[in-house]
Amino acid sequence: MEQSMSPMSPSEALVQLEQQRQSLVSELGAVGDLRPGSLTRRFRRCGKTNCHCAKSDSPGHGPLWSLTWAVHGQTHSRVIPAGTAVERTKEQIAEYHRFQELVRRFIATSERLCEAKLHAAVQTSEATEEKKGSTAHSRRRSSKRSKSS
Image 1 (tube, rainbow, N blue to C red):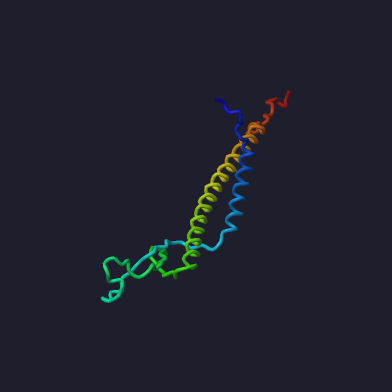
Image 2 (image 1 turned 135 degrees about the vertical axis):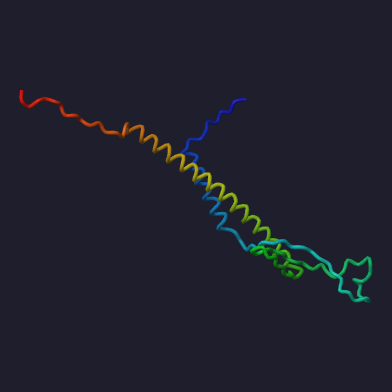
């Protein structure tokens, strides 16, 4: 089956890439609170023999929520209080992942735009060179006539 769509001209492709980049800039400007890391739910045993957590069928104390993230190769951890703080932290982590995806798409779009601009500049330069013709100037030689005739 043949496609009836014709390929985009280079100028149309540039316009489309510029629009994509501008759209991504707008989305990046709307990024909310974010934080990297992972949130884990943990249960712990306190070690007291007469505590409910000492029973074999008890999951222990908790859940306790822990946010873990790395900075320059060093792992950091912070306890997040149960309740709304956990939900906010989950939203902030999700926003961080959305931010990372937007940045990845922005970089990819920017690279394609740079390549398209470079290609357009090369084509323009080649077209200009074709119009100019040869850059070597011909030199007019003087005739070798003798002045004594």
